[in-house]
Length: 206
Length: 171
Image 1 (cartoon, helix red, strand yellow):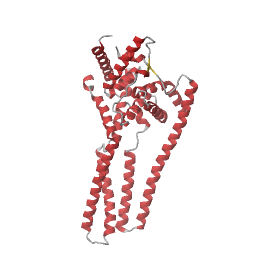
Image 2 (cartoon, chains in turn yellow, brown):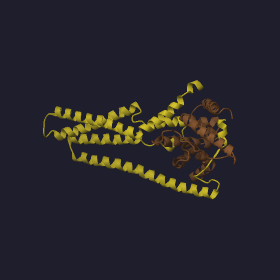
Image 3 (cartoon, chains in turn green, purple):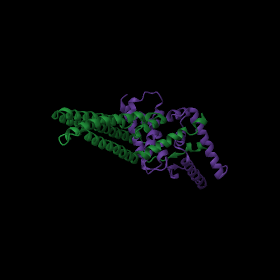
Image 4 (cartoon, chains in turn cyan, orange):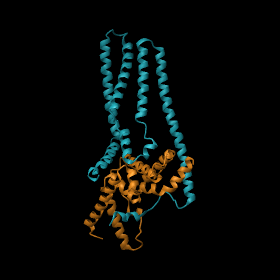
């Protein structure tokens, strides 16, 4: 009993009939039509995301023009923060490209792990902290300038805003992580399991 | 050559291989068909980027293996990386002889049990080896060195022989 014994086995097809050239051609032609419509759909999707981001930026910019002083500056900073945040999310979590799939399995798994991880690089944390600082500053300016008509105590407003924004950020991180684990945790575990089986015995074999 | 022509040629030459890889990973399950279609989509989207740095066969096998791995990992209900084949997935080459058929069935069941115990990389190596790919090509698909791929397959061959002999004696 050898592994090579199983090279000679032939499996049932069930999906395609390559023996019949006409059936084959028809099938491939149908697939090409399907793929072309898929490409159109993807293009539409990307355009929708870009349109959404542009619209959001335009709305906030219109608010900026209606405000003055620190409040306007606050809204402007929020616009920048939101735009950069959306850009970061778009680039960081965009799906793997078709090119990724033609990488050797080992490199492909590395790419997959990076894409699937909640926070993979140190730069992820740095970027998020910077973005939160931008949004926090903008939001803080809007919050404080809006409430200054009720109280003159800027320090109190600053403390309130800081507590609120920090709690929101921590909750957002925690909830995001929990949700991410629910959706991608098993997937990432499987990828890591496969990656680990690469290193298994490698040292002793090479 | 335009995209359609390149795609058609690539599929004509490798259709059976892609299909076999899907079946190795998913067995007779519906997911084999889904993975097959997904692989063709990735080939279609990427075919113009194929620069001939590796053989077309190797390039397509990389895509096939990578798509199958992601499809498997995404399927939460799937507890094992590979799904077992049923013995009925194989055309019996033993002919009509009942005794031979039974022996083939025993072998198939043993092989499927054996495959289930392998880690994902070794399972992929077995899949590619059974597709009669050369070690150099297997190495290009997996990213393992040729020496390592060869050593692992050798170990698997030894292991399957040993386990068979322990269970059924020498046949």
